[in-house]
Image (cartoon, rainbow, N blue to C red; front, side, top):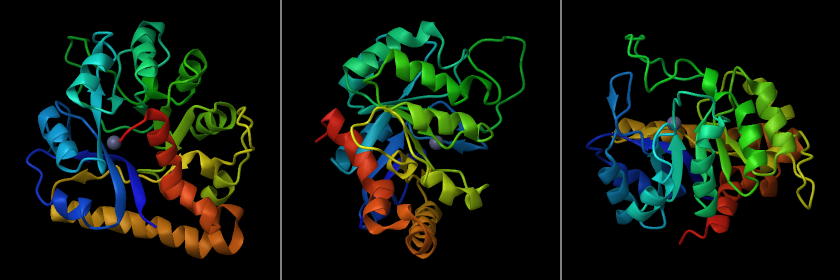
Length: 280
Ligand SMILES: [Zn+2]
């Protein structure tokens, strides 16, 4: 079974990305544009580089454009025209649920562009410089619970919660339990791996026609910064880790580890978003 990497990034002047795209391990890789952001010295690919890769690997790489929530309301339209399939905001000045952002969400919903929101623990930014504009500090504005408000206001917007939102796991659980249009990914999270068996087995009450469990709303992702051979190896290692976890722990002891349940986590939850959005 091939997996969908539902949350990854691309480095500037990436090399060897073709090797991972053609490795046979991934059905698709979804690349989040972080151009302009510098994390721990890493420089990210430009908008153009990301779009080029998504053209070179058409149908196998999806590009999510960087969305500045404090910017213009027509960004989803402009990013869709440029060729982006989805959107990725990061470090907004106000909480995700601030109504000033609603016109942007309205456009994203109308255009069927899923939005991957970073939640929880976040890379540290530079210290305050007295200017005060343009960035937030820590995960304060990116707590999972703010997405509950967005999910209610925009019930047809596909809300992808990047990561599990630690240290706000209870908020994540509430989101998955109660809101049909919120999913999350496991990338970057291994801190409480021992709690995951019970997590995947939790039941939703989100209005879905058939009862769902959390493994039906949680997606595999690497959050890898692709662009060097070591990144490819790291991504394959993460994939192997989760495959073994599902096979050797899940399928032996838990409902979610059965092959048809595991398949939801590795690919079909993401494929459902793809189908809803009509991506070719
Ligand atoms: Zn990321």
